[in-house]
Image (cartoon, rainbow, N blue to C red; front, side):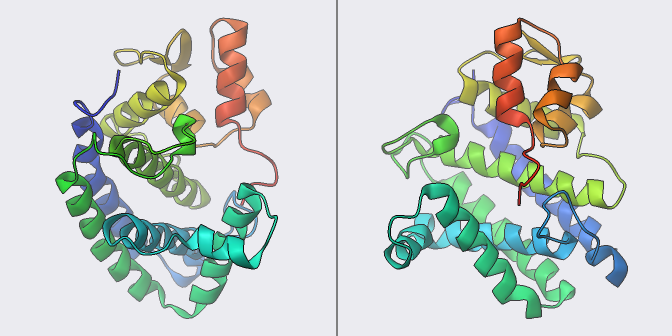
Length: 248
């Protein structure tokens, strides 16, 4: 199972994933940048800008020890729950950055991709970091949790952009393998060895289907119909990976 000693499977795909995203975005037309995505409030450019905001946020708070943006926002929105804070933080950033040109967004994504990969390669993966809810942590998490979560976040958004362009989810084997390892570790189960991809006793199917499921292409009912395994395990996966209808 994925841990601090084996996080290299994720570190090894951070740069290739960002290279693939940058190459994809560089070739888009203005109409393609404006296409709607599965995130109702965001176009392709909006999702790309959101990824850039994630990079800037993690570099600032993790690498540079700047105040956490969500904590700053919590001081303004007293009593707001975590989901409200996160959605507000993301929406404000994407709205504020609408003036950025696509060319500049791409250039910045290339730079921040390198900076985050450099930082995550250098940091001790077993050292304590911020809580990572993806791993159900309420206190400090080992840094490999943050690295793993960040990869899945990027994989999901990259796939959302690809699907908006009619290309399907990012399903190259190396990216699927890393994503399966992370999701399995977050669920506390062992991943399968390869196609058909599986997480614990739940069989996801071939790479294209597994990538779509794990990058939130389907709602929970659709996931239930695509995977096989013990009903309780299938239900846990469907609830964890199914896309809410109002996701943004």
